Length: 173
Image (cartoon, rainbow, N blue to C red; front, side):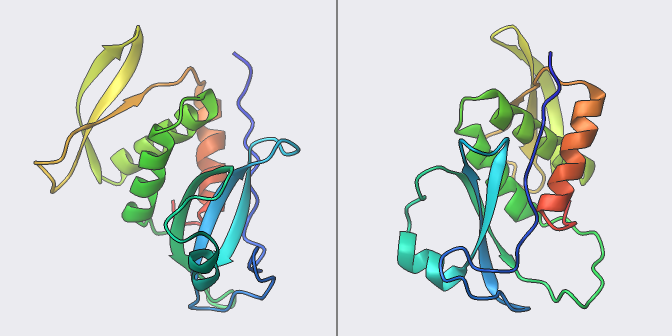
């Protein structure tokens, strides 16, 4: 299988809708968009109010997934932290898609959540002849377990995707 290539840029610090700078503490909606001219996903940051005014509860055309974050102060050093709710939302949004890139992206997110003990593995199943992780979210015994298909990736692919995800999430992974 050819290596999966992920190209997702870092925050520009500018709202994609208003073209205004994003300041420390601003509530920002990060969107990952499909773009025919770009290999992988295109990241666009939006001021929360501008996103709400433009899209309301609808997801914009071409938006693969989106999540809310607080714009960090670029002068303040950041530690590595995982925002489980953001990653869970992204993982669930990718589960609604039916393509190899989303499948690989979701699998690496699930591995990160397993590592951080947000998920626990219940078992491994076969689904359409492929391995599938069956995961439970800790502290939510009534929730339906999530099933995450294991894509055909090498360990190098997984490491590269994880590194790029950490960059996309601004060190949050």
